[in-house]
Length: 211
Image 1 (cartoon, rainbow, N blue to C red):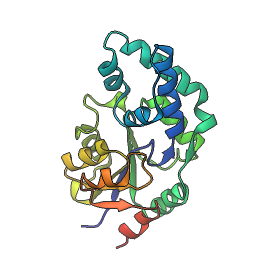
Image 2: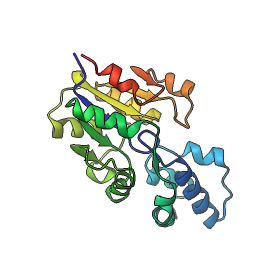
Image 3: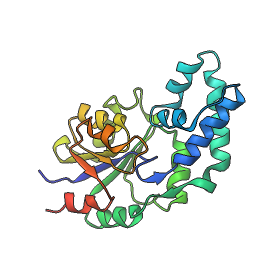
Image 4: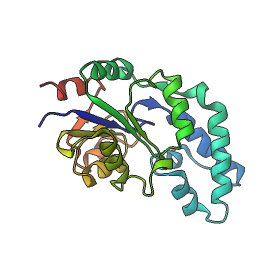
């Protein structure tokens, strides 16, 4: 069956927030007395903030999240841009009447900031954030919720992301999956999760969705 619905992760997939996230983690850990290497910060990208900080310090997790979000929001627009060819590809998919949605582990407020600053805010029929679900990716709930809102079927839906959580969530929801090669998580690591497609350029989606 052809692909009629594409669900996207946001950070690291559509918009480049990598340096903002890395700097926010480094700032937060430094604030709480731990020097964090860049490589360590990269490994934190993807899962919900709460999971990351609970693993490090259950007692201070809430205050660490507050410190992170304060820094992230303050510097957001200085860092965030769309990845190459994202805007033109999303616009073309929209013109082809492909249903588009966002499935992210971010909170709704910062999701809106990212879509606005990259001029992507008018294209998505549904945006599922951490605020909207009980279980975050890799649980299938966010993907299933997005499909339900769009009236989409798993057979014609594709989940696109830069992290293992995105691929696993898609597979757990019985949809096709695509990993992006510009992920900081490393192409080979993502291939190990057996995505249906590997995108070297966002425009590859135009070929995948051709009838």
